Amino acid sequence: MVQTADKTGFKPKVIVKRLLSALPERSRTVIEARFGLGSSTEKVTLEAIGKRYSITRERVRQIENHALGALKKSPAFGQAHAAFDELERIIDSLGGIVCEDDLLNFMTKDKSMQNHIYFLLVLGDPFKYRKEDDEAQRCWYVDAELAGKVETALKGLYEGLSDEELIPEGEMIDRFLKELQNINDKHRNQEVLKRWLSISKSIGKNPLGEWGQSASPNVKTKGIRDFAYLAVKNHGSPLHFKEVANLIEKMFERKAHVATTHNELIKDNRFVLVGRGMYALKE
Image 1 (tube, rainbow, N blue to C red):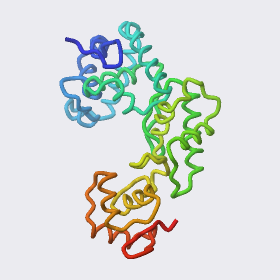
Image 2 (image 1 turned 90 degrees about the horizontal axis):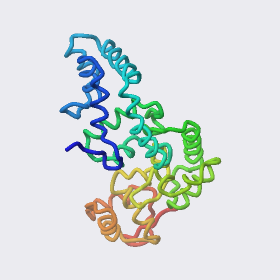
Image 3 (image 1 turned 135 degrees about the vertical axis):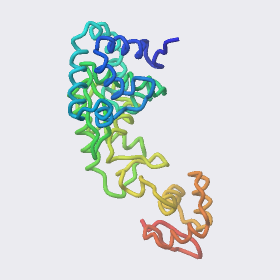
Image 4 (image 1 turned 180 degrees about the vertical axis):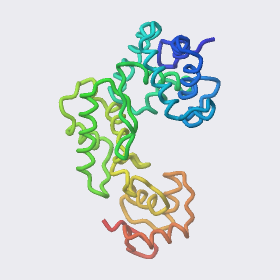
């Protein structure tokens, strides 16, 4: 039985197979290896393919680019327009710009199927991508103007955050909406806005669902002291170090030895001793 992608009405593997049949054998083999479209889902590097054929990695790149260009001119490319239209509809329904992993995982959990969908994204004219960098995840979009507005709004949102600030999700979404300019009403819903927030590498969410700068220890929790901070902050009043350890285990399902927790509270200047074994947040 030929598989259909979970969230689409088309069969990516059938479409890709039809497309690749228009290529010469070596070009087809290179494309299958580069995109993980064969028996293995592993995407092979230019260098590894070059060694296989005793050619340079640059020559492999030329073969790949020429093959993609040839496919765009093939009759099979025109026959695939319904699949491209459906992919465009899905991206638009997810907010018009969406992280690559979110998009592929939304459509199917099957790795081989994901590779075939990814290949169609690379090949299709409507689809553009934003490269991953220090500020943002790799994303796909179909509306360049909307993508620009979202990126600008994310930068503005980050610049408005203080180093240690933690914001409830509802308030974070409200702030984000104020940064966005003239977006379509269909995108003004929490699922789309949270999906857009996940594009940013500078903004993140801690285990309690609070948002802030992703580099902050209040968001990027690394050890017992960070979990202790969140536990005491969430509790809202001073706690004995034994209670802090118990709360960490209950809230975060993370083993917290009492002695270790006590030592971390002593060393962390975010805490202040207010009684025998009792700690409060300095703030």
